[in-house]
Length: 341
Image (cartoon, rainbow, N blue to C red; front, side, top):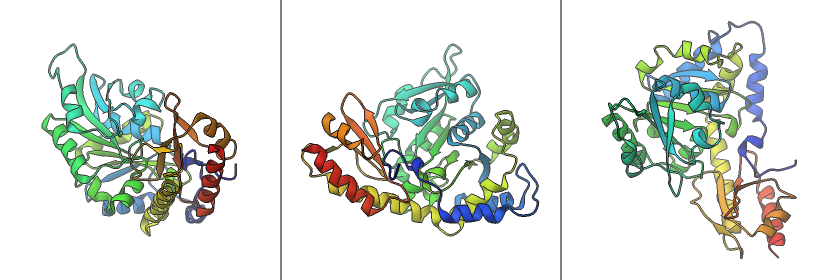
């Protein structure tokens, strides 16, 4: 596969990340998070997300999401999210299995939860026969490529806290949201009232590993035991920490995300006026959602891999990444034009 517009996960790792791994592969270091790299990474996370932020590394995004939700809930609780949310659609029921909680969903046109979607689901508090709402979970950016503003996040955080609930953020593409909004990470997390964050990097240039960032200090009290019992404690933690140091210290996360977003906008501008192409969502990240005729999809996917998002409507998803080039996009647009004839 020379190029792919199927997922930003299809890209390799950034050379700076690979160099950081090679540099960390020297001498001896303590394991299970007690190494120098993890200590330095913790300082970097606090400098970015606030003095009370505590970062814990996990193997993957599903693990990070589940760990976050475990830190926020008891098995009799309910988690509210958009129906398109990754924790609802793409984690094989792991959040429900390992938290014991009921996941309750709301329909949204653009993937973004708003207070009016959530309020009708905040019921039965204190009623022993029903799961008790405890977490509002949002994705930044959403699974439809749209980005929450700080004000939108704050409104959900205020609603959650008003009901003694928490706000969780699936931040697998948080970097793309920050790049689009031109805001620091803290502005759309800590300052906006987020309690717990799953912060990803593998979609934006890292090789492996994810981070759980607990922004509410009391949530971390027993988290070490939750992570261990959930089989997400990585023994040679220096290799995850070293990647985050390379990723965060000198702005690589932002540079990569900006480039991916720019490529998505470039792609959207190139296909927007083609006959038979309808862009269905705002392009606010590194994703372009569009509807194209079935015959064109079949021709195009033979040369450029991408996913059919909705078989019924013919909607597709085209993803760009840190190593997508204009030449890749130009070739894609050219082949799309041919497939439409």
